[in-house]
Amino acid sequence: MKKTILALVFVLMVSTCVALPRVHYKQIEFKEKDISVPAARKETYAETTCDATIQTTTQAPAEEAYAVIVTQAPAGNTSSPKSYSYEPVEKAPNATPSGTFAVNGVNINIGDDISAVKAILGEPVNTIYVPIEYSEDEYDTPYEPVTNAEGETETTTEKPLARADDNAYGYDGFTIYTGDNKLVERVDVTDPNIETTKGIRPIGMSVFSLADSYGGPVAVEGDIYKFASGGNAYMYFDAPAGVVASWGIIKR
Image (cartoon, rainbow, N blue to C red):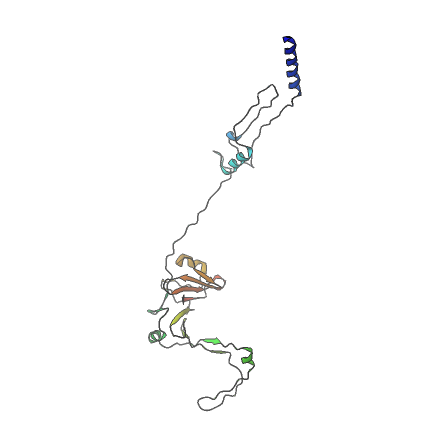
C-alpha cells in the first residue's frame, strides 16, 4: 500500500513539473543616452524552471533606479547630467532715494513755501502753459472779445488753446510745481547735466540700472517709477520705453 501511495506521489510531482510554465527573466540595464549605471543598480535574474531556485533581489524598482541615475552622477562618470540650483543674491543699493532736490547749493523740499524758494532762486525764467479744456457748450459759445487796459477791444474771435500755469515755476533745467496753497508739491528735472544729491545723472540711463543705486521702485504708474525716500516725498523717474527722460521729487 505504501509503495502504491509513493508511486502516485512521484507521478503527481513529475506531471506537475512538466505542466508548470517556464519563467524567463532577462538582465535589465538602465541607460539614458551615454549615462553609465552604477553596478549596484544593475539587476540580473536567473532563468529558472520549477526545479530550480528563483534568484531574488532587494534592489529598488526600475522607476526608482532611473530616478537615481538621472539625478545622481555615478563615481567617475563625467557624462552624467548635472543639476544646479540658483539662489537670488540681493545687491545692496549704494545710495538712498532723496526727497530733497539740490541745485546751485539750494535745497528744495516738498512742502516748502514757493515765496521762500523764489527769494533764493529769483523769479522764474520760463512760463509753463497748460491746455485749456472746454466742454462742448463752452466750445460752441462764441468767444467774447475783451477790452484791454487802454480801452481797446480785441478783434480776435478764436478761443485760446492754452493758458499760463499759475502753479508752475520754470527755471533753467527744472520746473517747480505747487498746489493752490503755493507749497511745493513736485520738482521736475529735464536737464541731463543736473545731478541727484548722490552725484548721479539719471537722464538717458536705463530705469532698470537705477536698482544698483536706489534699489527697486515701490510703485510704477505708467512710465513713472517711484522710489521711497522717506518723509512726505517720493523720488521719481519718468522713463518712457525704459529710458529716463526726466526725474525729480513728488509729494506722497
